[in-house]
Length: 238
Image (cartoon, rainbow, N blue to C red; front, side, top):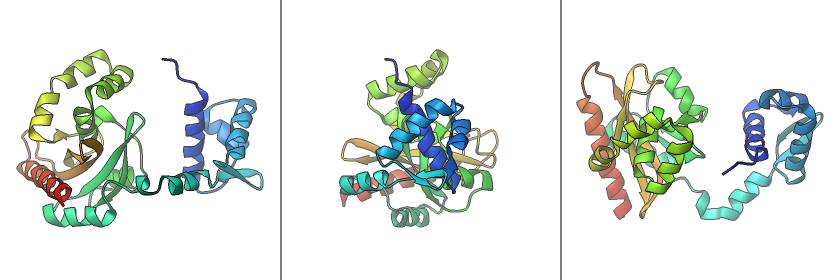
């Protein structure tokens, strides 16, 4: 199915404006999304008319449309785990934890608790999108998604070889209840991804970290992942 290019561009514009910390001019936005100013102007103006952007002098910042949509959604806007619940989990398992969700085809962290190396903390703090197959959280998300959704994501965002290789891991991930990986970002840690369900629906993943032990599995990480799964199961029963 062919995707309308305006939608990804609009999404890119909104993210650029959100991350800028100051109003962006039209030329700034066009440069960020690598598009002509003329076509960028039309899209920016549509976003302004709909309330997603607002003018501030010669620049643009986020408008109130996103806020009103969240208010309309009401309870649907609540995170799968609150920061207080994540803090409680961190105390229970005595390991750094973070909550991440699927946004489009990427894993995006909402918040985290616990000390981690600066480069990992920046990924969580700045909500940097991460490829699913490159992260333990993403691999857990893929493994526990409905088969048709998983197949669609792999078909579009993984090579045939990557999809086949990951397919061999799915049963093992589902059997133990979590995914493990070193990941390309984690220089000093190994991480596990544990699914968070609401009823039978996959809502998010909790990512758990432990010091990397070169060349062999990390018992501390596996123990933390199992305790996380048990804590989530107990929470779901309350």
